[in-house]
Image 1 (cartoon, helix red, strand yellow):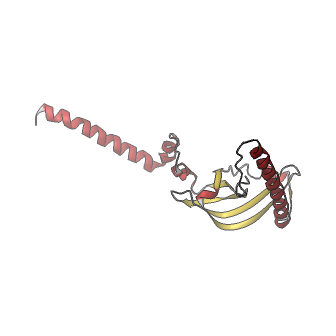
Image 2 (cartoon, rainbow, N blue to C red; image 1 turned 90 degrees about the horizontal axis):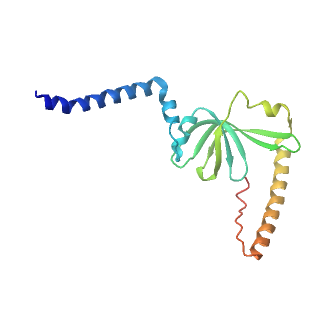
Image 3 (cartoon, rainbow, N blue to C red; image 1 turned 45 degrees about the horizontal axis):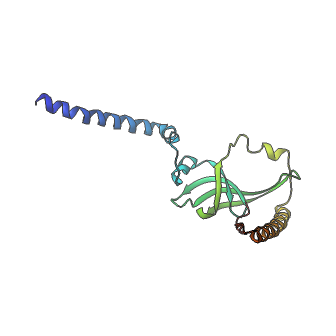
Length: 172
């Protein structure tokens, strides 16, 4: 074999070694560290949250907490051991109700993030827990009041030629 052919094969062998080293690192649990180095703007950003407890804020203002089990390219989510919570921070009260396994359509997700399970209960310890039905009724009344205020605000702004885009489904 000539020296020229050896020199041409050398870069290919180096590439193979790098790929094997890279594959070995990922298989040894460094995948999370590798993925964390990149900013994803797609649903691929959610991959590191699978099998972890997350918080999801929906367009209708509902707040859900649960373990993310799977998702798809549309950010449809499946939560296990899901709990819906309603907070009234002004009155220092909250309510929660178990929802079990919960499927969320991606188009309804406003925000999601991982929950630090060591600190999750700290705010709840200083708040008073109230029945969920009572909290739901109060929330419905507050949402109705806000909807009327936003509708009035939109009409006032329209009179001045300003477009104000508010929808009942956007209560977050």
